[in-house]
Image (tube, rainbow, N blue to C red; front, side, top):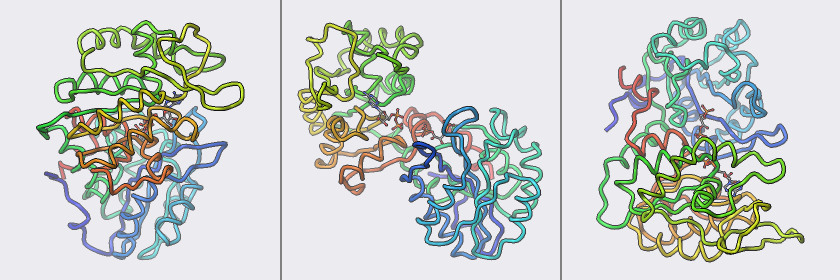
Length: 403
Ligand SMILES: Nc1ncnc2c1ncn2[C@@H]1O[C@H](COP(=O)(O)OP(=O)(O)O)[C@@H](O)[C@H]1O
Ligand SMILES: O=C(OP(=O)(O)O)[C@H](O)COP(=O)(O)O
């Protein structure tokens, strides 16, 4: 299916510039190890073993956000997965970066500083415009080839993703190759039995896009998380409101409530909402309440309840295909992992075709002792996975296919 070149087409002993997606959760300034490092390590190791001089680019956060930090910690985490040294230079394309690039020996690996610290990277512009930037024009002449492994960022028209492939012979890395094949196959695949999509997480617009675009393919949507609560609010329940200093619901409600109401109106018979919810009681224990019994807008709900998990479990076990995007609760806290883990366990125990997407959600698999082998495909992409599901193309892939 792929029409791009891969690492199989790359001759050994080259100077290779590689784009990874190491964008990760940052807690109290500490970058959290996750599946992205482990997956990209395979591409990086393969390149180093083939005798290339391997220079890596990646981003972290966006300017102004708390998680917009240097990639120094990323180099150390990646090194632990590659089992080789990964050098780091706190520069993107200035003198220090060029000097470090030029002093690399065959098989050595160097990570450049966060691409988003460079002004040319972020504004979304045409690939041709990105290729003309100082960033691309300065760095590209120091390389023989460009490899894009960042499938999960391939929906962004940023310089490091779309500029370099117009200036250098360009190849897809192993992660790009696998994710592209697996995710693109979904949009056109047909199933005889029930197709179910579990949608949760914090981003209501992602959920709405999926439901709008996949309503014809998916028979049943099982809702949870922040997005699920917004649907419950639209259905007339007193949940899905910001409580205290929370900033999760009210803005998203303003932006999306009309679309949510029309989705409930047009596709109500395909949509399952939680019948009960879990919260933290005064003794810091998990407690539950039926949605019909909620009569005050004064509590934060952190998971779907036990009756909901049981009914979602039954639907999953009756399905031929199950797609997951977003968690059903705050699964990082074990007390509120029941919804997310219940659904994942039901998928793992049946032989349905399954795809689990989302950088955060896929972390629940190893956190709760499930095996990646029990799922059809575990994607490290969130936004890109959603676009692929709806059949939309990704600009970062398109430019690779031009090569
Ligand atoms: N009720 C909830 N309250 C707070 N956080 C929640 C709730 N439900 C889900 N989440 C959080 O949603 C996150 C995943 O959301 P999102 O970023 O949309 O998905 P992904 O990263 O998987 O694409 C998880 O880290 C989880 O803790
Ligand atoms: O983590 C990412 O997106 P995702 O959370 O949708 O998987 C990518 O690195 C893209 O990052 P961005 O959404 O800041 O451009």
